[in-house]
Image (cartoon, rainbow, N blue to C red):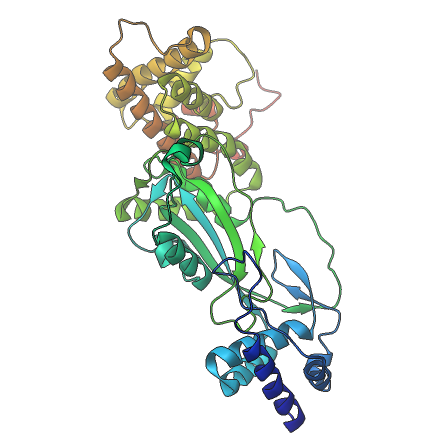
Length: 419
């Protein structure tokens, strides 16, 4: 840096020190400080070829591309100089110019499950308690919201206060995006499938099974990046569906068992993932439901989408449902008989709920209904796991006569000329 630029920076720091106490009315306590970049500092900065090159460029975050200029760099420079000193700030800026990539972090906050430690689910994607996410912005927010807040007046309490479920787990992934800057907007295409981190959020349903729901998601520059807080923040969308009423603890053992399944799920053909999206979604909903009727209906849809795929005829659906479930998951003859009866009961519950508004007749004890439905949730999760582990849905006709599991697209087709 030239002496003239250093002098201009020192003057800019004095200006910002004088403004340090200023905040807009009603600004949030976590709002970043207002940084003023004087024109004389901007003019001196543009004499540096590295700064001049930033004019009309685009900042590349991979999933987000934003307009960029040297002003973002100067604001970050002033911010870091105030916090850590001028020498540290200049060194950080030089490191930014030398780097070939932007380090970004993607975060997905989950309700409906909780974890006690950090686990790498698939390479590069971690699940952990929200307090363990390596994102200083999230940690600042969690610390702020954990402080006691004034309660509303008692007579207004029922208007504004409701049961609040806080995220019990988070997924995060740190990635390196290259090139860090673009000269023009690239051609954009509609993604073939959801981002990997969101796919992992979906497959977590089979751990338990449980009911993970994405409550918030965002992407930003990773901690330690020079421009963090200045550029590169992107908010995600979240689903607003059936409420979850508790965060189920998913044990380290369950997460360990899920690792290989999640890894294989991410490598499946998109067409298979699309077919699995309905049972995963409906199983997730079924876990959340407090009503036995709603649970039976969503569980029934999940199981039917798994077990009645490629069923061209509508005849004997109940029999096919029971046979396929028993042969898909049965370990031996006795186990298949037990599963055959359980799937019959589950199909009956789903049909009864759809046509009568209750799951079973009044003669059926509620404890038996709840036990069967809980077993159905577990069987549904196991069926999804089996299909993922085998690489796709089975060729059902072969499976139900005792043949080995063959993925449907790999099944040997009969000779059309055969009798």
